[in-house]
Amino acid sequence: MNLAGIREAICEIGRRVYQRGWVASNDGNISARLGPNEFLISPSGVSKGSLTPDGLMLVDAQGSPLNGGGKVSTEWRMHQKIYERRPEIGGVVHTHAPHATAFAVAGLALDLPVLPELVYGLGAVPLVPYALPGSGELYEAIDPFVGKADALLLKNHGLVTCGKDVWAAYFHHESVEHSALIQILASQIGNVDTLTRAQVAQLKAARDAAGLTTPWLPPRFKEGKS
Ligand SMILES: [Zn+2]
Image (cartoon, rainbow, N blue to C red; front, side, top):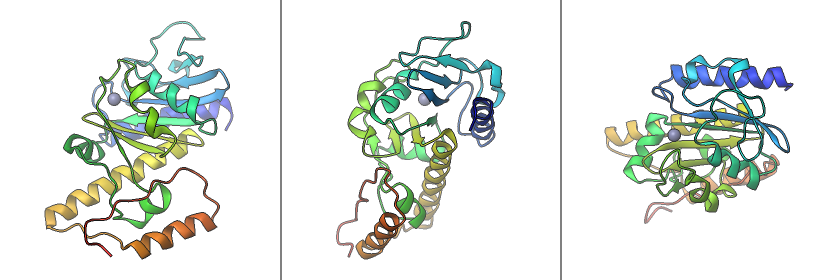
């Protein structure tokens, strides 16, 4: 993706997360790495549904604006931590996607092996302890988890995903939110059955055979599950 393509991708992802109701008001932020000390991030105080390519903020690794004007998202520090710890990451998406966030509010990780796609793509999605949003505290809070998973639930807050580029980060977001919705529906029907250990091992083997090297946290099995 060239620079214009990355700018357009951030705006398109902004429209999608807004239209899907994953953010309210000016919530959420989307960023991309352009170079070692150059990043694009959605501006503070602008709805993700109204992003424009020229309105995105160009910042250095400390989050200082490189192109004047505008206000950098208060959650830059969380993005910064991911880029610092994961040199292969090119994009980060953070929203309050409601079904994923419902797990975070319930104090639950999305770590049961329920759907093969999520087990294959991400493994378990851990729950990061609460930190005051926008305060920079998330920089420390996510530290123990960043190297272990491409998707993190933030307690009583939301979801953050990363990927080799901003689209990969967004697609992880879709997978997590979709899986969370299905688990909530299944629990309303009355039962969330999970894959067996053998079925999970099969998915992990397929993932390894495909050469996927992104972090993978082993899912949790319910007590007594074979
Ligand atoms: Zn947030």
